[in-house]
Image (cartoon, rainbow, N blue to C red; front, side, top):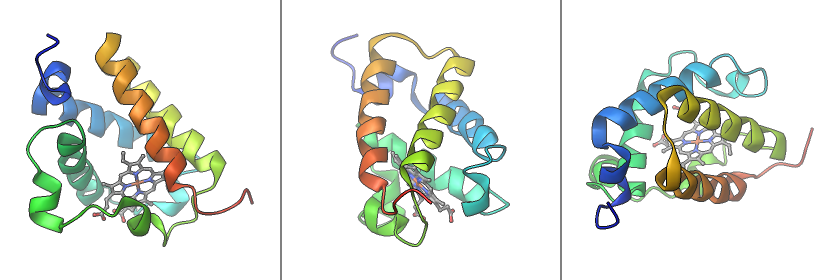
Length: 126
Ligand code: HEM
């Protein structure tokens, strides 16, 4: 198991697809998040699946279609407060619980997401 890239250790496309779909079902309902997201999250979820695939060491699907992620720059049009970063991470935690993602692969993945979410904060608390 130690020899697998995180994308494989996690369970590959099937697991990532379930995780991302579950995640956005929570985002859609979250009072701090839904106001800044589009009503239709189909395209957002598709891009997030591409991004997280490469984030976890899988094929560079996001970059192949959209170029360098420049994630912080792409988030600048949206006011991302510390509260919204916490909300994003709580939706992800719930999604990981729901799909039964556990163990070291989850801990490492969530740790990296926490770091990235903090890096996206671009607006003080309102
Ligand atoms: C896009 C919010 C953190 C990855 C977006 C969009 C919003 C958003 C509003 C635009 C949705 C759209 O127009 O389709 C947030 C908030 C975060 C956060 C509030 C809290 C910190 C993250 C993190 C990651 C991430 C931690 C990656 C690990 C992406 C990607 C896109 C995206 C890949 C699509 C970019 C594109 O349009 O190509 N996010 N985000 N976001 N976000 Fe986040």
